[in-house]
Length: 112
Length: 120
Image (cartoon, chains in turn yellow, cyan):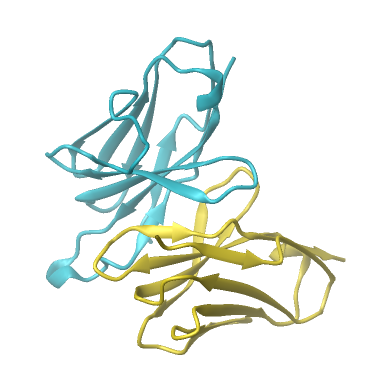
């Protein structure tokens, strides 16, 4: 059974700092990995999707990497802003399945 | 962009009543929709996969007679929590997968804003 773990559970940083969020998964037979953002009491916004054959994806200040063999992904946020404060969720799609398996998320607070 | 709505956004009900939650894809057709449940500080857990015109597929441990899913059209799926109890209080989120030619878009699920259910 696939399990997704995110570390740390919470992170507080001053504005302008670069930061890394970590995600690990137990079964490397994934189809893709996605990073989402969730604001309090809201739904999910997809940030980046990495196919299993890819190593990284970039969008603006965000960069996500994937090391499938070791079961790890990182989300790098450059020059953090208070508006980046949210919970960031990592999810994998298992090979041969359309189901998403989520981690518990990392709650990020960027202080002005 | 593809937008998914949910209604209601928040509902409070008495124990023993039934609650219906709607999930709509506003500007695209979705053969497949998904229902998730999220408890505080926990992961989103998939409850069931809803397929238009056929029975939903439930995840292990999810009671199909308690969580009734109907996907009668390509833009609407409903989740009914029957005889709700306080332990059913949770945040329910749906997502929809866009139908595109050649199977394009199968990677992407568009998520609704969620429904906060509180059972007293």
